[in-house]
Length: 296
Image (cartoon, rainbow, N blue to C red; front, side, top):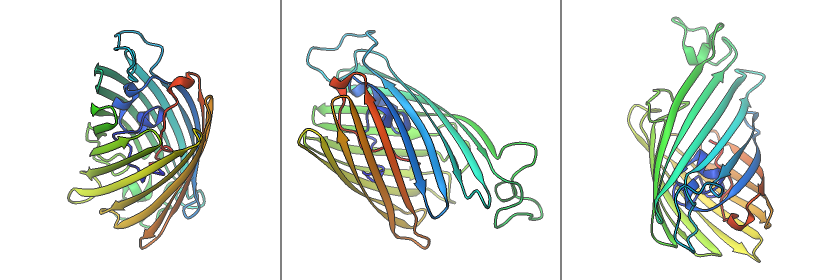
């Protein structure tokens, strides 16, 4: 979130489970994370966590000195979220299982299986009780609003150690639902030890009548081998919003505490989103420098 959502090329560790799964294999880590997010305008809350493991599998030997995983890397993550409990009371569970493999020392591929379950109160939305009834506005009394199995696929290439190029497609079974839109994103990231920057672009093929773009960029300065200072910007052509993002992280050898905020600065109905995360580095040699996880 602190990078404006731009993590297709650099977002490793647990971030990769939600964004580009190929990045799970880009570094050797064994991390555990817990997260909490909330937005005051819609009374939206999210709780979840994840595990990323790319250090214990030895299926393929990597050259000495490389930061890539030794073989097959994996990760699991899940969040439970709720919004507008006094109104539509929408609740959703998002579960993910990701696998990645270093095809070459600088080329990584990955897949994520995703299950999304969405429920909401019946006939409470602003367009509820229409004739004929609308599924999204009215909900259903006998079943959830949506129950979706889908998958994401990504690839990351590093022509040189400091430069990463990433591409990821999400919800590739084409569920046809704005709650799980089919998207294609690409990003370019540069990591120079104490400074990193990434720029991404994304196309949403589902939510609107025609494909719409989203543009994201962010940067991080890593000071004193502990303090991460992050800032980003996001332009969403579909929602016609622009958002300013920022975050801080304290990253020790064994754990990290991180926080991020996204504030709409151009919007008909501005929203604010906060995310807090705590990570434990079981394999602290692969702690890395990840931005706080995107919440959506």
